[in-house]
Image (cartoon, rainbow over all chains, first blue to last red; front, top):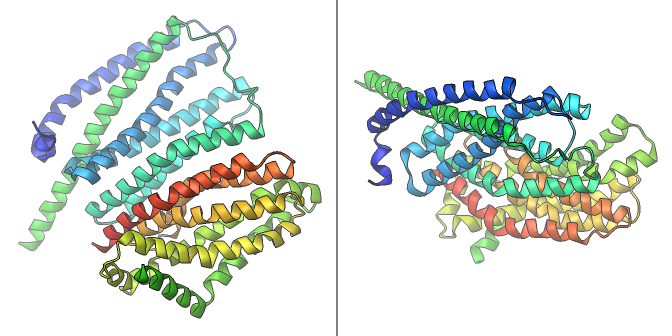
Length: 241
Length: 221
């Protein structure tokens, strides 16, 4: 089975339709279990108290923020190199999801930071690089929106995504470098005890729930985009006939 | 090689005859830097502390605002399309335009920066580092900016979009540039920062024209 087997939109839509309810159901189930464990079962941390529970949303969001950008860059590369028609679609569909997760990571981190660090925001290297990642997502989405021809927009956005992917490690490195220069890491080290298994399991379950949610949402968005294109084509055909 | 030089000569001639643009970038640079003492107060110590950052941020914005000159006019009157027919690889056409952009923007900014550093009361130790980092760093601004300029060619009123695309990519240049000057001002070793900045520019020289050329080809399709 070649890579282009699912380039056929009808075939893809059928497969996506079959996977989607499973992914969605799995996400809901895992989220319920994970949230129950995280909010009820897990004991409060001896240092952080109940605020530690924010971590069960925060950490998976941050993981997903990075995963989505990797996915986006990967899909863009496939789209540019093999001209796979669904790759552009997948990249476009994953961008808002990634931006959402990045935003969630920033907001939950901020809410956690207020009681723990006593401030909503610090220019810590890690926070700063996530903020920049958020801007990269916004730029990517803005470029898609600005170019009308979706074929061209897809390619231009793919070039931008790849440039961004090359830059992400450089930005990360430079920001780390910048921060160590200006302020020694003192407040911000999370030198708690290594994570205990009673906390690790809920965290992993939440991470899996987020991933399943990503799959479900991605497939929904891709099908939506395909249907939008079909509607546009039909309208055009109607007008010209 | 001949056509490569011809493009640079042509663009330089155009820039000289039209004047304006280089002057505008310089005035913008001057004006932005002037705003900072007005905004944060005239205490010499405070100004000296923020001088490297202010100079670099202002130079970065001035370089960014002039990016639309890179391809826009040639794209609109069709000469960019003609240039691609010259047989010269698009990457080299882009590189020629980047070089011209640096000569008409980066170089004037570099020359103006020490004067503004005096106005901001920067420590004498920082001047060599300021000139050196600007010399090494501003080409990177033109190189990276070319990608953004090429991507937004077909976008009407792409200025704001261009800044959203380009500014996050400029961050490493800013960080290493300012760190080097800060280190020099405080009597520390500025060399690692300058070397990292140079590495950045060196990596950008082959990669950026390549990516920008892909974007230019897209908009000419």
